[in-house]
Length: 93
Image (cartoon, rainbow, N blue to C red; front, top):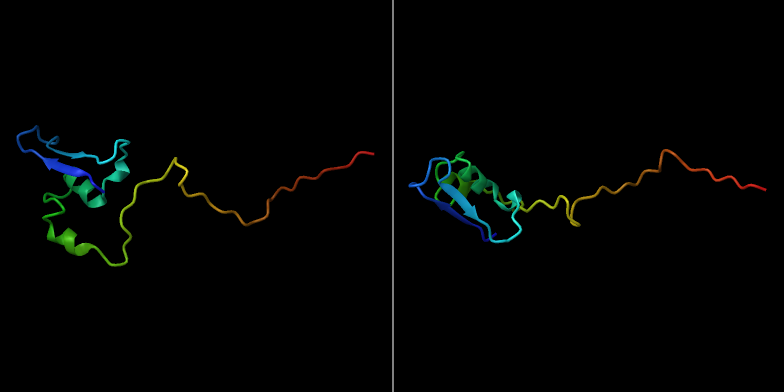
């Protein structure tokens, strides 16, 4: 996705890993899950060096995608059931 990830051990612990986003409108879902784990110190090795992560990707897995919540592309349910309340119109003579 074009993001760049950095680590600097001379910085304050807990603030020595960061990401530069490729896009200007930043959203947390633009970080891939394996990089999120590395950024939050769940994994010690970056995903590019972690053999478990490199071999764990299954063929049936969809690639990570950015959240579309709050956009026009957001998922909306399609309702095929009849409404429970039916409006009745009376004609006045």
